[in-house]
Image (cartoon, rainbow, N blue to C red; front, side, top):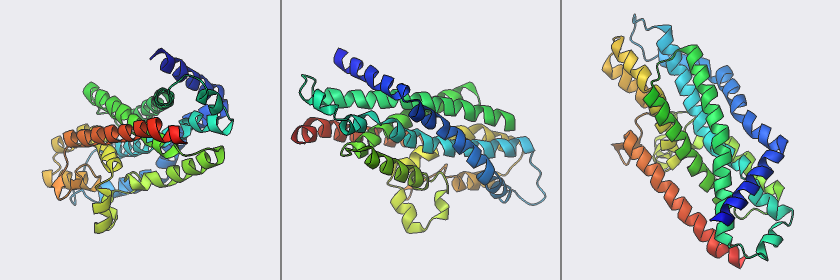
Length: 298
C-alpha cells in the first residue's frame, strides 16, 4: 500500500510539473462553458419555450435557470470523462520515455503500478472537474439560482462517480498505447465523439429509434441523465409552482433525457446510479485483469 501511494504521488507530481498539460486540462471545461454559452444557449432556450402553452407566461429567471442547468450538466457529462484521457498521460509517457524498463526490473508488482496510475488519474481529474463544477454553479447563479444544499451534495457525488468511471475507462483504452502520438490521437477522438455518444450535445430523441435503443446500453447515457436530473430538480419544482401543466413538465423532462428508457422501462435516478456503479465495477475488474495478466505477457 505504501508503495502504491509513493507511486501515485510521483504520477501526480509529473502531471502538475508539466504546466502545459495541466493548464490545458484545466482550461478545457472553461472553453466548453464559453462554447456552450455561445452556440447552445439560444438553441436550448428556444427549444424550452416551444414546450410552453400558448399565452402562458413563465418568469425569465426560471427559464434561464433551466437552460443554464442543462448547459452545465451537459458540460460536466463530457468533461468528467474526456478530461481523464488528458490527465492519464503518465502511463503512456512512461512507455514512450522507456521509464517502464526501470519499473519492470524493480520488485514493484504490475497491479500495484497500474493501480497507482488509476488513482493518480482519479485525483487529478477530480481536482479539474470540481473546479468546473464550481464555475458552472457560478454561471447558474448569474442566470437564476434555485439549487439547494442537498442538490449540490448530489452533484458532487455525481462528479466523483463519473470521474471514477471515466478514469477506469481511460485506463483500459490507454492500456495498449505506447507512444504520445497514439495517446494524443485517442484523446482527440474521445473528445470529439464522446459528447454525442453520451447525449450531451444532442438529446436522444433527436436520434433515430434504433440508435436510441443502442445508446440505451451505454452507461454514458445515464451519466448525462443523472446530472441533468440533479441540476434540473429545483427548476422543475419551480415550474410546477408557477402553474406549468404537469404534462408539459413531463414532456420537457423527456426531451432533456431526464427519463431515459432501457428495454422499454423508464430508468429512475436510483437505477442510473446503480447502473453506473455496476459499469464502473466491471471496468475495474477488466482493468485489474489487464494489469495482472496482459502486462506480464507484454
